[in-house]
Length: 97
Image (cartoon, rainbow, N blue to C red; front, top):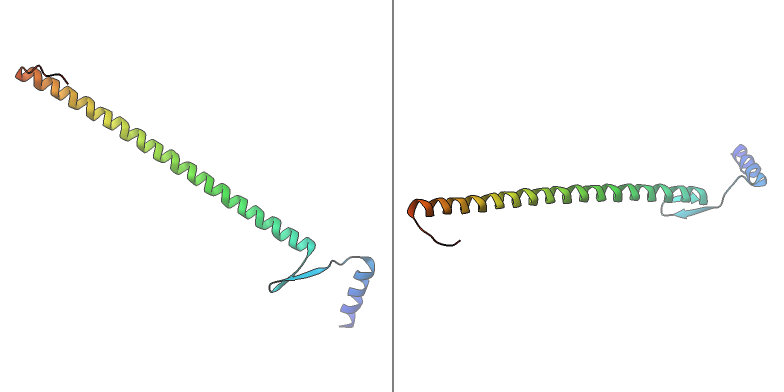
């Protein structure tokens, strides 16, 4: 215990200690708290970036699905028109489409 007190006394005299603030169940110096906040901010930024990337992927996927559905719809309409024309020819109808 005496050694620890002497060690602390030396650090205080040499200016090698920082003020510590109790936060919740822990106690942090200013530099420890700054590092903690930086690490926390970095983690949040990484999560935000991952969310942005996921949203971009989902939007691109949805756009591709809509494009495929539009192409299929147009093909179906073209086929219906062609089928109607063939029926009109076959049965001699001259109806306008």
